[in-house]
Image 1 (cartoon, rainbow, N blue to C red):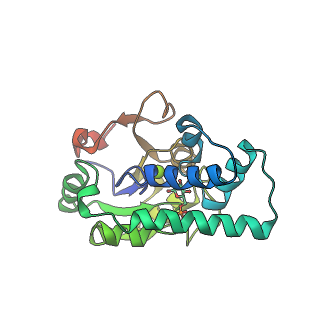
Image 2 (image 1 turned 30 degrees about the vertical axis):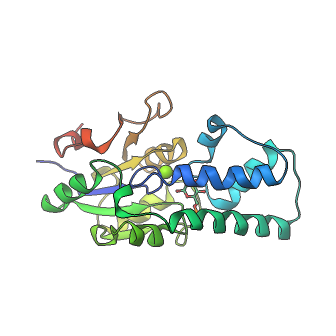
Length: 215
Ligand code: BG6
Ligand code: MG
């Protein structure tokens, strides 16, 4: 038995590897503005909203733009990103995710999305995973981005769970921090060297079982 009532999932880099598409589109933006950035720097963009990401990138390139130009470039980046998203298929759901979500459903544990993305419903439709989710909280619902816990606290409320009854799955440092700030357990998906504040780190959901929710 578990006291966990809800599992809250980040989308990009957890359910599906859209993190690589974000990286490609942001790099194209940087390149068109005359500079480049590394995969290591890209780590800082994970979990961060579109406009905040743009600010960070412009800083790296020492580029200053007017507010109107920023909106134009962010829109351009999103269009490039969506061109990649439109090509996505259900085969891109990361290994073990569908099985684990099915196990959660069968165990009566609620499933919510907690993502900074404004494109989350479109992506879940493309990969045919909308039906798994009892609640979807994303960039369209929140006023404060990760590492603020708002997105996950809203997910807990939407699934009628207390923060202490929730487990968050996150690939981003800012996302793990958001979960911890909300009083939730955080399971990192990725590298233990990067996700040092997570309670547990898995490389893929193939390692994940209902039993491992209790720690
Ligand atoms: C997060 C990603 O899930 O969503 C970030 O990790 C991204 O890289 C953010 O910037 C916002 O996404 P979108 O799709 O609204 O631009
Ligand atoms: Mg992510």
